Structure formats: C-alpha cells, structure tokens
Image (cartoon, helix red, strand yellow):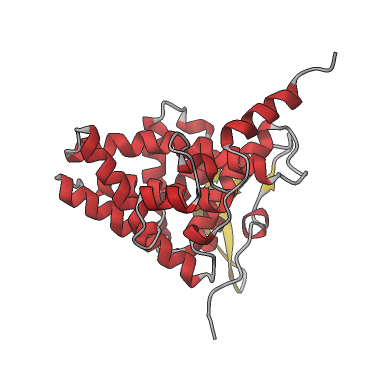
Length: 278
C-alpha cells in the first residue's frame, strides 16, 4: 500500500491566515511542517535562500518576510519563546522554489502559489480559476524562469545558442522519458512555427516549471561548470520530476492531452473579455 499523503491545494489553504486588513499570510513554522522539514534549522536554510532570491529580484524583503517571536506551550504549564516569520504569498513561492525537489509537496506548492497570485490579480480569491487562466499564469512564470535558467547555463559555460538548445533538450529528455523537443513537437501534431510550451495544459506546464526552477537552482547552488555537467544536471532534474509524478500516480507529461487553443489564442480571448462594452 502506498504511504503517500493525499496532498491537495487545501493543504496550503488550511494554514493561510488573514490580518485585520484582509491580507493573507503564512507562518514559516506551519509551512515548515507542511513541507515536511522535521527540523527548523534545515528549513531556515531554505528560507535564507528564498530571502536572497527576493533581494536579487530587487524586491523589498521586509514586505514579504516579517520576523516575529511567539510563545509556545510545552505542556504542564511551561512555555518557551520561539522565532517565527510571517510570510507573504510571494515569500512562500520563493521558499517552495528553493525547497527539496524530491518532495512531492514542493511541486504542488509551486503551482498553488503561482495560481494564488493569479487569483489576487483578478481580484477574487474565492472564485474558481479556469484551466485557461492556470495556463496563462504558469506559462508567464515559466517565461521568467527560463530566462533565469538561461543565465545559469551561461554561467556554467553554455554560451553558443546551439549548445543551449542541446542543454534545453536534455531537460526535456529527462522529464519526457527520453523524448526530445522534436519528438514532443511531433507527438502534439504541431506546425513547425508552433512552440510546444504554447500547447501545454496547466499540469504539463507545471511539471516543466518545476524542472526549470530546480535545474536553475541546482546549477547555481552547486556552482556547476562545463557544458556536459550542466547538461547532465538538467537531465537528472527532469528525471527527478518525472519520478515524482510517477510516485504520485500522475500521468506522464507526454501522455497529457494537448489543448486545442494556443497560449496566444487564450491571451487574445482574455484581453477581449477585458475590453469595455460599447
């Protein structure tokens, strides 16, 4: 019998708090438990990496990470003061980006906080987000993280565009069970000018987002140097994400359905809906 926990987006909703102004936040200690970090000192390392990512993004860290202390009950009337952090949604997202990629809950956390961002943008945190909105949100995140991944690859020594194409291909091969970008393109039945990322559903996009963020982080964290080493890291991360999907009983990315509409079509339709009626 599988010992995997029944994770869902409610896992993160259950520890979400609202302040007096209705702004949402999460406590680091509670997030630590959900993300399956047994010891605070190990989780603190992840938080520190998230803070550094926040600083590198040019964002004011104090707006997203608020240090605080609180008393906890030790039993028999004893109490002890512990340190905690009030986290914004963005802070939580940076934390799951920098978390252990072997944990299935980390992958779920990435999509949860990305989608929560979209919900706030549309100004209604309670209504259901459509599949098209999920696709747009995650595709937007993937564009930004692919830029960061390209920068990491360049730092590793991948400068020539042809070498970068090989690097990208290795990531896909790891995630898609050996299939190359060309193979994926063919399986989706796309025209030569159509991009595979523009014809992925939200689940497939989320898997690729996880691949990109974790490859980026590992190359930087391990200070990977050399084209072959960087290619191997990207491939191995892809394999790890694929194994996580398998352990969860999910559908392999190459077997997921291809949306009829491209991301560009969805964007046009969304913009049309936002136009004022005449």
